[in-house]
Structures are given as structure tokens and as C-alpha cells.
Amino acid sequence: MKMASKLRLLLTLDKTTFLFYLEAFLLLGWARTLLFYKFSKIAPSLGERGQETDQNFDASHTPSMRHIAISINTISKYTPWDSKCLVRAIAGMKMLERRGISSTLYLGTTKDHSGNLIAHAWLRSGPYYISGAEEMHQFTVVDKFAKTSNR
Image 1 (cartoon, rainbow, N blue to C red):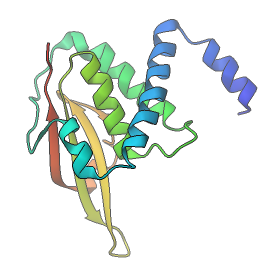
Image 2: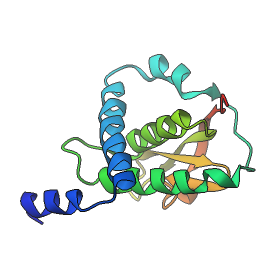
Image 3: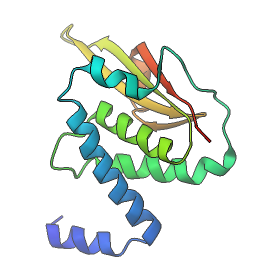
């Protein structure tokens, strides 16, 4: 799809979707810059290490959670930088946090077909997976971070 047609499509979106997409784009960029720091420096900002948030959730948050999941997963395909699993999970966590919605970021590892260690990150809020759910079952959780709602 050419840039002009992508821009035209973007301008036809309703205001809510456009604003979620814009927020996702900005936070994906912000999350990507965090990867330039040592993980030990950014880990405290991810929430309470080794903890999980509750599987229960406020049903009124469902529309926001859906918008966030769709925005993160759609926009990550069009960023000029790599927006892989950890970047998507951090950006999604920040979007949820801004709305007072609790979430848990999971980090997992496994070995690929060649025996090399590979990592993956995914994000859950209540029973709903915001990002990374497609591949999470292949990975063993090695750490998790709970970001509880302040509201």
C-alpha cells in the first residue's frame, strides 16, 4: 500500500481510533528508546517484579482494552523502528496505566529449532491478552511485572 493511500485511510478513521493509533505510535517510539538502557534500569518502571495482577477485571474497561490491543498490534507493523514483543508490551502497559487499568507484563524464554535461547514478552490485563498472546504458550515464564491501577 502506497504512503498516500495509507494516509488517506488514516484520515478516514473515527476520532477515537485515530487518537488510540496516535497514542500507540508515540508510546511504541518511547518504549523503543527504553531498550537503549540496561534492563535493570527500566525494570523498576514496569511494576512490581515477580507479581501478577488479578485475573478479575472491571467490565467497563473492556472497550479501552480492545482499542489498546488493536492499536498496539496494528501500529507496530508500520513504525519505522522495530516494534517487537517487548516494545509492544511496554507501550501497551503504559496505555493501560494511563487509563487506570492494571496489567502484568510477562517475560519468557525457550530454545528455537537450532537450540538457541530466544525470548518473548506479552501483556495481560485481567483475563485479556493485549499483546504477544499468539506465541506465549511456547515460552517458559522467567519473570513478570505487575502494574496495579492507581484508581
